[in-house]
Image (cartoon, rainbow, N blue to C red; front, side):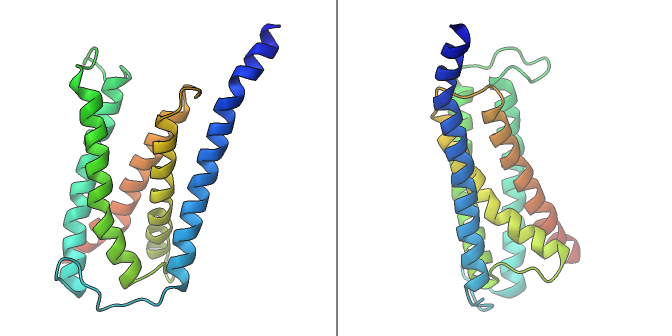
Length: 185
């Protein structure tokens, strides 16, 4: 009897995980398809800046995103009592984590908009392909995390995996874009 009860109570969690993974793939595939079929507009501006000036601004904003992603990681570790020596997280930590995630998402939008309108999804080099594909998956992973964070029926590893994936994608985007731009200047 216990086995059937466990199987039944786990179904909503499995469905939520499957839906979340499907959502990630749909969002990433839609962005990829748009980026591949969209005609790049190399004169596109970012807050009035064009060309290398726009790319330098994206690198600076991307660096801010990476710092915010580190902050998010620390807060998440603290909330789940995985931050060595920190003890239990104060009551403000979950709210700060939620607000930090919203700021990270909003700050990423102008960067992504410029990337996809100015360049689209390009694959002419390994670095550029990695950056383009990671950018597409970032928004799929973000949508997935938002869906998972609202679920009460998750396995213990699902939310940390989604958050860790988001952090990893921000790091990949920074290394393949912002760092490359900052070291060429």
